[in-house]
Length: 223
Image (cartoon, rainbow, N blue to C red):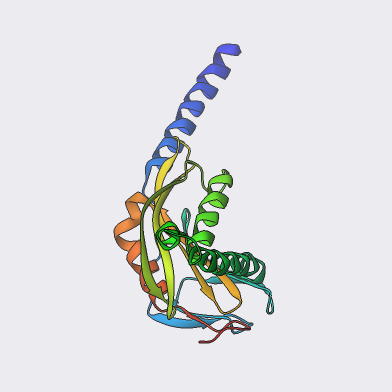
């Protein structure tokens, strides 16, 4: 009887492993890109273009925090977070920056000392990297790449290419993306997007197009 069980279970186990390997190694299917349309969050804080068949997910507390996410496929997402608390930290950085500038003017060589200090936006951007590095379950193997400055939603933004990993049946798979920080009125804005490396040629240009279309109208800010 034990031999019969082996004839049944061994081939079944082999088939399960083979199927897991097959589906785990297949490229993930991305839905066809529908015509771009504009979405506005319920609190009117975020307006953005997106493929019409990419469903938006939003959550927010009016005037305090607003979150918007798109997840068109597994391991492909774009997330926007606007919060007042983060901007309070930036206000402290602004205040310290102003005081440091005033003090620098009073001592010999002071201006040269503060010439390469971080701006409030850069300070918040550095904090974003620390937070992502600590979220091991969300961004395993997180690493930063090149950092640049761009104009996003009419404001100066700090942008960094980054990578992390996505768990899979046959081990982790590389994810490529970008993280963005900017300040809007009294609010701190964080944008993170990425996808599996194999999806990069299709997904990342769409994510960038979406970010380029971003409009913000937060309380205490301006369009």
